Image (cartoon, rainbow, N blue to C red; front, top):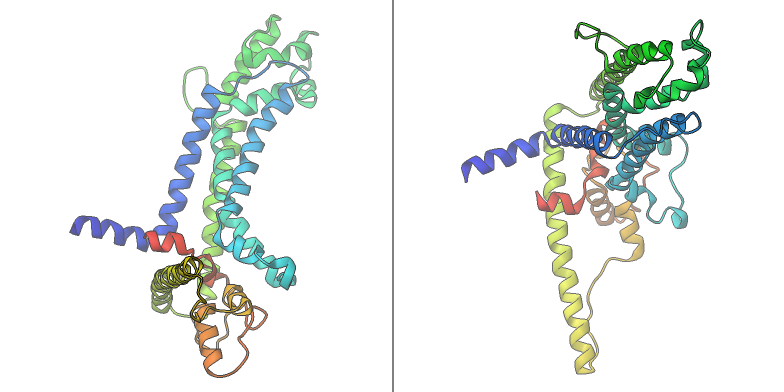
Length: 326
C-alpha cells in the first residue's frame, strides 16, 4: 500500500510531465504501426504527393483538434460563450495560445516521428514535379516519369534505378556502408524534435520567471485546487441526489417538494468564468473569489478584472472528473 501511495504521489507531483511523455509515446507508437500496416504509397505521379501529405498532416491535424476537445479549459471558455460574450483581445488570444501549445504536443510528435521514418516523405517527394526536375537533370529522359515508382522499387531505367538507391539511402538516413547519414527527412525530424523540446522549455522558464507568486505558493495553490474540486464534486453529487430524491418522491406521492437551495444561473456563470489574477486579492479560484465577494455584498469579480497570468493557467485547467479520479 505504501508503494502504491508513493507512485500516486509521484504521479500527482509530475502529472503534467508524465502526461506529455505518455501522449508522445502513444503518438510515436501509433505512427509506426500506422506507417507499417496501413500506409502503402500508390506510386502514381498524380497521387504520390497528395497521398503522402495526407498521411503526414491529416492525422496531425486530427490530434491537434483532439487536444482542444480534451482540454477542460476549452469547454470552460466555450460553454455559454455566445450568450454571455467571449473573452476578446489580448486576454482571449493568450488563452487560445496556451490551449494550442498544449494541444500541439501530439501532432508535432506525429510529424517528427513520420519524418524520421521517411515513408510518408519519400512517397510525397517522389510525386513532386519540382523535385523531379531537380533530381532528373542530366539523367535518362524517362527519369521524371519513373520517379513516382521509386517508393515501390519498380523503376526500369538504369539512371532511375541508381537514383532509387540514392533516394532510398537519403530517406532512410543510411549510407552504402550502413553508417548513419544526415539526410533531409531525418534532419527535419530531429529539428522538429529539438523545437518541441526547446521552445516549451523557454516559454515555461519565462512564465515561471514572471510569476507573481512564489514556488511554494504555487504548490499550495495546486493542492488547494485538487481538494476544492474533490469536495465540490462530492457536495454536488450529494446535493443533486437529494434534489432528485425529493422530486421523484413528490411525483409518486402527488405532494409539493420542499424548498431546496440551488445556485442560480448567474451564480453558476460567475464560478465558471476564466480565472484572472489580482495581486490585491488572494483568491485561489473563481469559486473562492465568488464566495468572498458574496459575503462582502459586492459583485463577484468577473474574468475581465485582473490579469491572465500564463503560469496560473492550471487554475482553469482543473477538471472535476480527473481530479476526483486521482
